[in-house]
Length: 233
Image 1: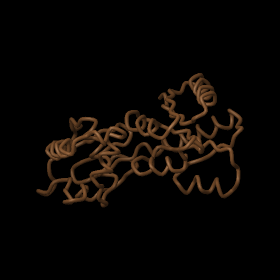
Image 2 (image 1 turned 180 degrees about the horizontal axis):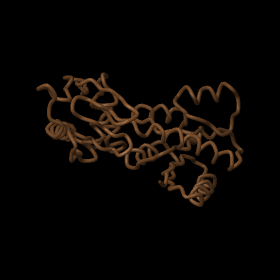
Image 3 (image 1 turned 180 degrees about the vertical axis):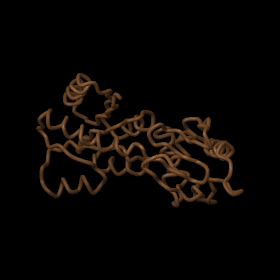
Image 4 (image 1 turned 90 degrees about the vertical axis):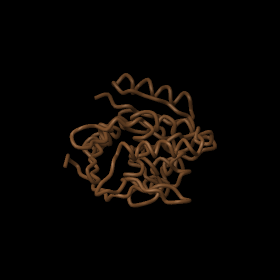
């Protein structure tokens, strides 16, 4: 498998140099230099690991990490110029998986990346069961019976966000942001309604109740209890 790595680094020379080296080791690489582009790539691509610079000009890598953790458990490796214990602890507290301090040795970065990807691969067999539905985190398929449901990419994003957030409610604004990212302010309110309605139809019901319920004036909630497994149920 060719892992897809996302480098978020605002220093063009560092980003391009790192990208070239990782490609020479067989990795697929995307590069972003700000928070908005990072979120757009994460929503569009199947990223295996984010290499995230703590300082992104006006942006904060820590703040971006917290935003990512609102909808994704993709591994994050921080690049930081500060080696103080408090800063390193802060990185872990916001959801980082590991860190490398600048200037770094490429071999050290590669070893840490490989360790994170190995651990992540062991967890990629996560399956979510809810009623008669199964979601495979690795194949990104929603299964009912023995068939994968024909969900559009938007419908799948909505379903997975709600499924993984159970039993919490997700607001309409958060759904719009995480599904359409920077374009969410241009998306009509009815677009979300239509996609949720179509998704409900495709998911069907469990014990005569829909999988997704509307919380009037707030947003939506996955309504059927969810279990997570490391292997297929």
